[in-house]
Image (cartoon, rainbow, N blue to C red; front, top):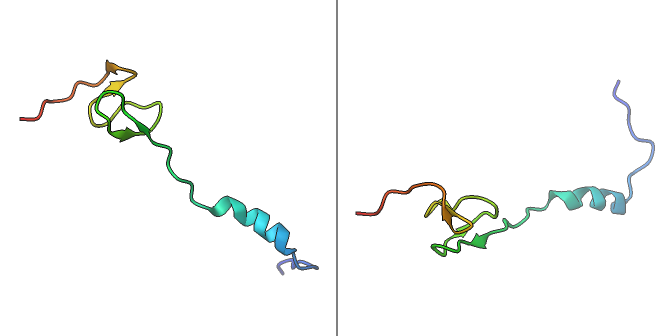
Length: 62
């Protein structure tokens, strides 16, 4: 048999557990080279720059 709780959990205890379930907004920063939004501490997927240095060579648009 499965054990059952003897007492009902309080609303505060329930709500404190559920406080972790919310979705958090993604933190985005503006790329210093092209101005696109990107994740912090990552190479820009649009232009390939990181901290003002081209890290990934991108093909030019034709």
